[in-house]
Amino acid sequence: MQNCLGIYIENNLIKYAKVSRDKNTFKVESFGINFTDNINDSLKKVIEETYSFNTPISVNLLNEKYLYFDIFALLSKNDIQKTVQTEFDAYCDENKYNQKAFETRFALVPNAENKEKIKAMDIVVNKIELNKQKQFLEKNNLTKIMPMGTAIASIAKLDKKENALIVNMEEKTTITTIYDMQVYNVDTIDSGAGEVLGKINKMENSLSKAYEICKGTTIYTSDLIESTREQTHLANILPTLYKIAQHVQKIVDESPLKITNIYLTRKFSSSKQCRFIFPRTFAKY
Image 1 (spheres, rainbow, N blue to C red):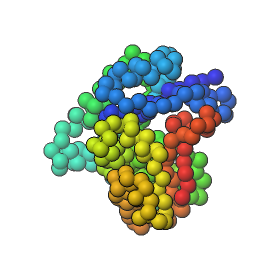
Image 2: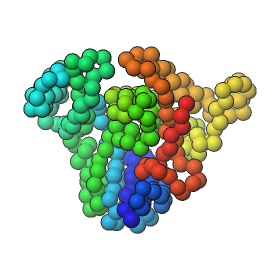
Image 3: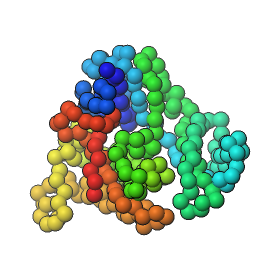
Image 4: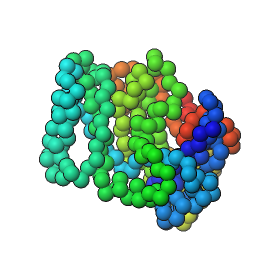
């Protein structure tokens, strides 16, 4: 039986799930969320509580950027690499960045708007921030650091015929566009759970309480005025949801291919059985 500990890190919280695999069946052994002022101590606690001292650990990449370059499809592999590097160098020069300060990886996908070209998605992260993440887990079995915007697509059971959006609302919100089971674009917007929790935390003076309030809040599609009276924190939640909905609508309207489905990530229910390797499932709209 194989095991893996998935850890999601933000500024003041850690989400985790330990998953075991037996043939084609996945089982969530444990999962949870910790609010903390000390990431190192909390990571150590999670590893101890889940008995993951020798378990492969996967964490999310922090504050990555996604750049996109159009490249002629007939170029050789070496020429494609050179072109992507040239485009990245030009981006750094334009923004007065030091190219050596970044670690980059790129992926290629068909260009939905121009068949003569391919689209390069260049994922960029600051080396200092990347090294900090590695230091957090250097004494443990860290095996992968993955950008959630692209990795999240691998746990969705999508059909080849559907073009989909996956909306992942964390501290910031990422909206992953997928065409024909391939990640085509990742949009990151500042409006997200961090914005909502921050507003409620100012009123309640507790991040954990703010989190529980969000979990316990029901948002109705009708009788909005009455529901707002009953749930005082809706005024802190709804504006953020409207911003996200507007951005999603903009992506749908401007998509070169018709978006057939939109998925929103959410946390586990009380069930211990799951076929995914991260603490979230998908709700289809």
